[in-house]
Image 1 (cartoon, rainbow, N blue to C red):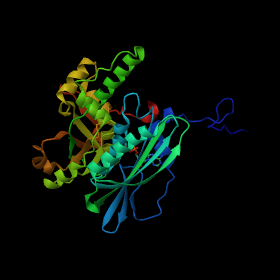
Image 2 (cartoon, protein in one colour):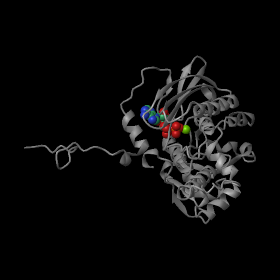
Image 3 (tube, protein in one colour):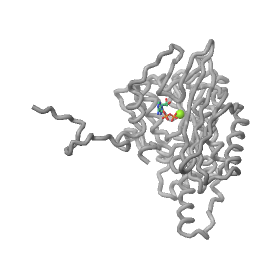
Length: 355
Ligand code: ADP
Ligand code: MG
């Protein structure tokens, strides 16, 4: 009797799993399921915005991000200087999301001969500018040629006291769900850039019409990291119970907090902070403004939870909005619309593999 090998297809070829089917997070889970930690200093490994490593009376935060041409950036509208700045900022943002202070970074490049040294000078001017602004030391990297295109990989170290670190897993039922700044503008910025690019493709004599969209385009091309939030919260005596940065869209990040904390949530759609002009533009482009915030991503604001008893301390802080609260896991992960309907939150963020 033959035993049917279930990983073989009808023609007896091994059945391979497509990455599209798996998705980015499915792939990470699959690749890392057998990873074991050997050192007790590794307080947090895979699964948060940064790894957390005990070092004396402090912890080191360690994170890395890869930016790939054609996937994460498009050089038709991304100036090199902005690209360098953004590559640094997205890493600094991951340290901010752990409630830490960014300290050192390395920058590695894989670059094809299509690029000039002058272009890469600009890229580095952007990296250095971000390092100046956020007081981060650029301490090394690696440089390689590449068959095609440009890839930038940045790794970053940060620091915090052990008790200051905010994990994705610390949210509890009843905690208030808060967000810094406003959301969705980076997505509208991207929409405008893509629209002008397609106009330009049809008629190269057309000049891009980008004036008047400075905020939206700036949010997309030159985001900032919210390293200021750490001190703001220390100042009002509030420690978030959990935190994550919004790189992939509000929905996806809320689901990360819920999953890792083992809780549910109620998000009030009408409370999501969105810039007024971004709302107008979204409507003009037939995009529901809250969808730009929920699914757009790249605003690099911080999403965090605080204990309910901190309500008085946080409710009037300019630049922080309470958008909902956490619930028991059994209550589900819901968005309440302005007319009171409860909709399950689903992630449609920038899941790289599905793009
Ligand atoms: P972020 O959006 O904050 O950069 P990611 O969603 O990229 O975080 O990653 C989620 C977690 O999975 C992080 O802890 C990250 O370090 C880890 N991770 C991502 N890719 C890999 C990989 N190829 N191998 C091991 N860990 C990975
Ligand atoms: Mg992150």
